[in-house]
Image (cartoon, rainbow, N blue to C red; front, side, top):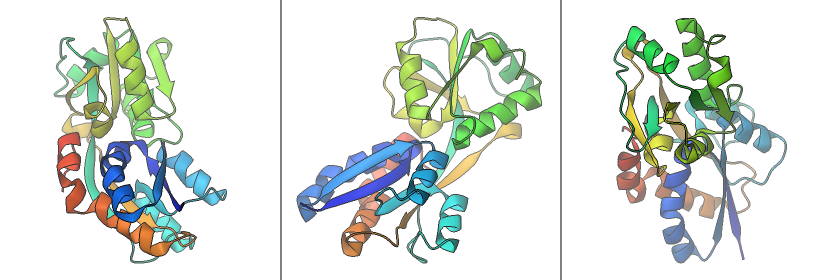
Length: 232
């Protein structure tokens, strides 16, 4: 049986899974998806992991086109995803509308969940926000980094700490049971990430890879993407 491999940033995991049944039913192939921080997924591709379709940020896909790992012209945008703040389901929503409110919300938290500050888009951005607020050292004891945003949100959902807060891509918040989106980061710190797919030059079956790309970035996934917070 043909296996089609996807390496993807966690923000798009639910989109890929949402079209998996249709893809497998229509093609007879098996879809194998791996989802984590975009930097880790890029590194896996460069290290030779099997990959037919890759979903990362638009700049990273452009780099992979330039390096010969992604077919030029195969790029498709899934939409823009903003970085947001989350709390456990049922918890009060703190005010985060401006710099002072955001700082107060983070200061009030005893646990702060977020993705990898080295390889995840939202994790890198979150740490830059903390540094801009002058809170990166002060809040160090409360920081709870995880490999990706979906894992961070799942762990926050299991926490018994009432004063828990998280920051990651809004899709990873919206698609995770047990957490709620408070809102996007204030305009001063706004980050909207264009998640883009590309067909890999080493794809084992290019027509199947293109079929999957159309399902993931086309009308078949539009409702799933909108529900999760993709804007397009």
